[in-house]
Amino acid sequence: MDAREMKIKAAEAALAHVESGMRLGIGTGSTAEEFVRLLAEKVAGGFQVEGVPTSERTARLCVELGVPLKSLDELPALDLTVDGADEVDRALRLIKGGGGALLREKIVAAASQRMIVIADESKLVETLGAFALPIEVNPFGLVSTRIAIEKVATRLGLSGELNLRQSGDGEFTTDGGHHIIDASFGRIPDAEALSSELNSIPGVVEHGLFINMAALAIIAGPAGARTLQANR
Image (cartoon, rainbow, N blue to C red):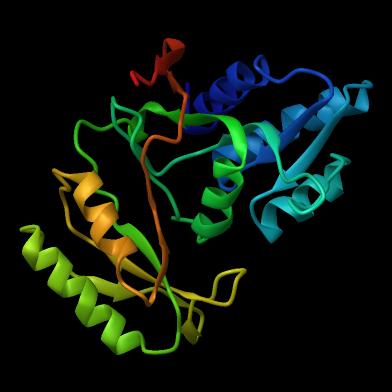
């Protein structure tokens, strides 16, 4: 089973949790896109769902495939969000934002009664941090914000490069008009402490640590999909 087949298996397992009539948050990324394709097949067969996309990229795919969409203002309370992750540990703490949609992903997940994460087994880790942590920042005061992030990292015993994400000939810009600093810490022993510290920096719009948000993680491997449940 190759990587795409594993993503499809995880998406299929998540789709089993979606009921007709649901208000659904729809995630961003390659695994979430497999979920959108499977959902679109059900919608074409008469399945009723209203989706809120977490990015312009996801919105375009949903429109192309015929998945009905609403804005989060139109559907401010959602039943379920299905989204991918760049890393997930066994406590269902996540790193997200590799695709640059972390702010909208977190807003949509927080508006949902439940969040299901879908991923292939390469994303399951014992400790978060091998994947560089995306930190969404306001362009204003960027240097000051970067210095503040460095100070936080030092206080928590973290080290590694802080790289401003690039796209083409310039800085990557999110759907919300912000930039992203990718923090290559390597290992984040205390994700809760880092989350709290980053939240205290005014120039940090949001960060890619999703803590106490996922109810289930569906992890696909060569033997099929298995489900991890949050213990809280």
